[in-house]
Image 1 (cartoon, one colour):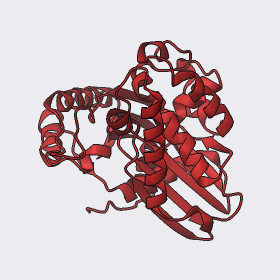
Image 2 (spheres, rainbow, N blue to C red):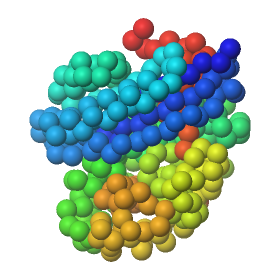
Image 3 (cartoon, rainbow, N blue to C red):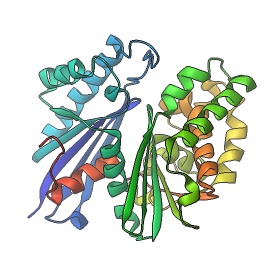
Image 4 (cartoon, rainbow, N blue to C red):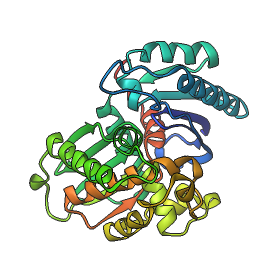
Length: 319
């Protein structure tokens, strides 16, 4: 029996919607709608002080989710599963924010941990690749954090690291274009966070399979593989390979450009231009940390993972 399901992710940089037609098993899932809105929830969010989501950012998110509820209303959606990630986990006014979403839109958004986000992202990212590697690492580079899911020989390790493109840009890249000293400081910070995150990559088997997902990764793939915006779909993006050297070459080109100049580059969504230098550098340092020379891209991610979890009958942690 087919049914329509929707998943929503309210993240640090974007709010995203997925509507699918699904059969009784995960293999029958077909995308009907995929949307994102730049809500910049991390804008003005001070991680070292009061950790408050600013009113303007909150309003942008409320408008986005309200718009998503209208989109869902155009389909016979049997259930909406919505989650909040990124800075909402740290925000002192996070509960107030989620309560306001429910009051304004009727959509109940569940706050999930970094560990659960990593698990769901890995589930969504690996499913369409149809690859059962002996050892794999899935990383989801977001706006406020990066989630890592490592699997080998039946064992799994999950980590959420405070490395997000928006937060990194806000904390370190104050100039436009950024100064070399700012880029160097950011690079050292990313390396330090990765070293402190554990597990040690020295314990990973040789040749483990690296999958990257998240807005920065898929944007890099679109730019390097010359994918026009209208073709950025799971069918086109899932399985593309990005070489570390390719990303480093592109980073060398954009690090000296202004945000306005970056926004005009082919394959780039203008709304992501301001975080591409920070996000690209984070992706490079992650690959260096893993000792990986390339990664496989998956546009499918947390949104698909939420749907798969529902279809397979798994319960939420809060249920």
